Length: 107
Image 1 (cartoon, rainbow, N blue to C red):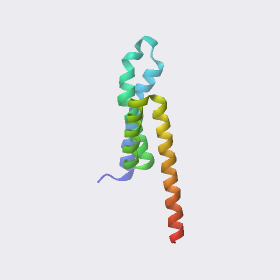
Image 2 (image 1 turned 90 degrees about the vertical axis):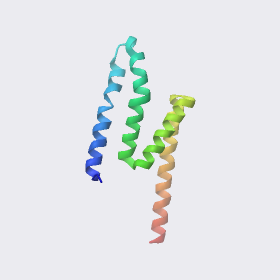
Image 3 (image 1 turned 180 degrees about the vertical axis):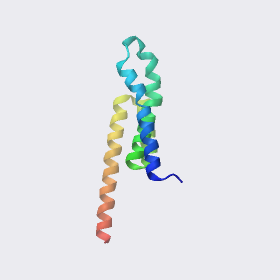
Image 4 (image 1 turned 60 degrees about the horizontal axis):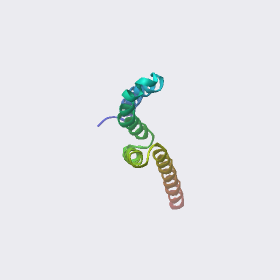
């Protein structure tokens, strides 16, 4: 079993390394954007979402967030994907507040 500190370090490095294609996408000449777009959309962004959510809230939340992003992006585009992530964060925070209130009530 990997210790939490080691796991977090690995995820942080993955997160940083997969940011490089986004930087190339942003700063590349306009003519080269079609070369970067598929890699950024379907590899780099999903890996960033997965590793970021995993560090932030755990693997279960990361898998849900990644599936939600890919499904919303594929079905409706970028705007719907961002709104789905916002809705996921609101639902997660609501769940945390309800759980904290229930544990306080039981104590």
